[in-house]
Length: 178
Image 1: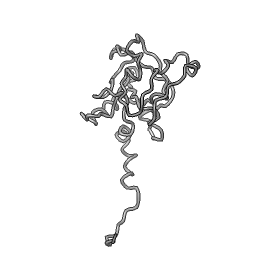
Image 2 (image 1 turned 30 degrees about the vertical axis):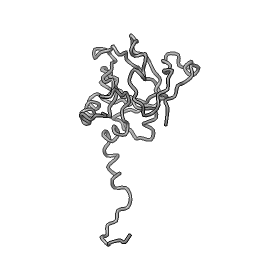
Image 3 (image 1 turned 135 degrees about the horizontal axis):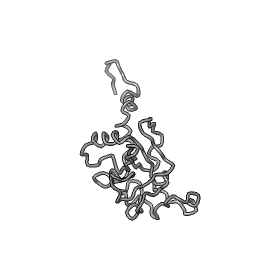
Image 4 (image 1 turned 90 degrees about the horizontal axis):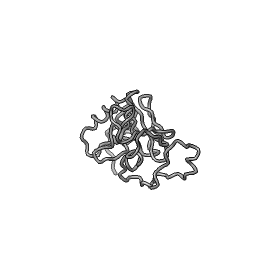
């Protein structure tokens, strides 16, 4: 079971503007909320930066694409789209993924997967009129992480079209004794 890593304060000395990770470890599979992942968002008065990679990955896409994904999955109880940061100036949404979850996936130019860099996190009090705000605080279960495999299949069905035809298929109708 993979746990989200907590870096030592010395590791953050090289990046003085970044908010250090929370002092707790969240186990993979646990329900993680925005407040768990970004505890400073509840008291922050302005957006702040958090390092991407150790505790989460990001997936940036056009707002319309994100809204289409949400609609496509409808009212599923465990909705695969979690929290999202809205960037109205660029008309983009940033979805939060579990750390390392996009490894090996081929994301196209439609979306931008990041497992390193910086995410500017808005305060919880930020609204749609702000330059940066929360579009979603999670799914119905308040889970912050989106499900990358389901999102990938929904965004790129052509990548999965060949999966049904992999392997040998017997074409003759001769009976076989087993």
